[in-house]
Length: 411
Image (cartoon, rainbow, N blue to C red; front, side):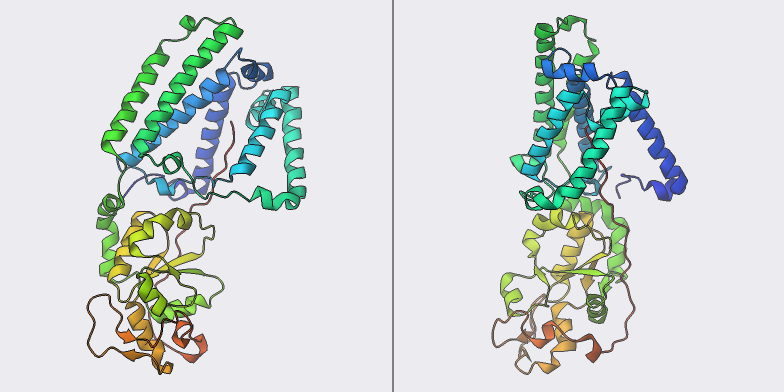
């Protein structure tokens, strides 16, 4: 099991967790202060190519964090799916960036650096921070006027490797090389427009760049863990739940949960399309096992902390494999429909005179009922009434806390 990210509240308690946040915040603010991010003239100088400290500091932070993060995932110390990645809203993000950039040039600060400046009692930083708060208020009061544009061009949880269609290691190397080139180009611009001598810069920067390039090359060789490798690491702790049948829920519990307004049930039917079209539970989503990994980014963005995923197949074979995949990819609150669709029909298909058991017992993960037509969820058994049935079963659904989105900013 991957030890990171740490569950700070479980380790240190709520007070200890807030103390860790405080220490990290102070360290972050201190880093910005000693880098000169509290001085508006120095920040604005980057737009005139005289002092590119902001570019160097921020890109250094970005590439170091990126290399360390993906090194940790490659070594199995961290599951990237547990790291919140802000969803991409392309055009609203571009326009927002342009607006902030213009404000940065005019005021000499971005929202984060204005707070650093205000913390050192600089008047201009304080006024900029107040302006930021006023802008947030105006945005909140007018967002409904351009909501369609603001929430348009939605690309979900989109990362560079996915966008470029390249392995993570290759993408990391390209970003590191791009940053090195930008640092070199920035020094040349500082020499031309700011009169700085690049030879006076600390030579350790060359050593640091070399180390990052070497680690990036190692990431290409090691690669990122596959779903199968992730499951192999989790199996010693998770497989027992399968053996003890802690995650196989009775059809009665699923039916009760569907009617429970406190639980958001997402049913994933992992059978092939032919069986799904013959019969499926009302509200169940077709998610063939072969393509299941494609929708995992979407599942990880599910905002509701009370969301429960129930995977189902004709019996439990494919559903169990799907459970392993989703569990390995850190999708929380995943359960298996006990006995699959066949067991569901055993309990709820009595009213469907047109549904009959197959004369020859089917093989593994095959439907054991025949249907007069492919009506999908238009059979009564697809949506039985809770009040017409009463079952005895042991409830097994236990909600796990989901990791919510974290804040972000420009620094």
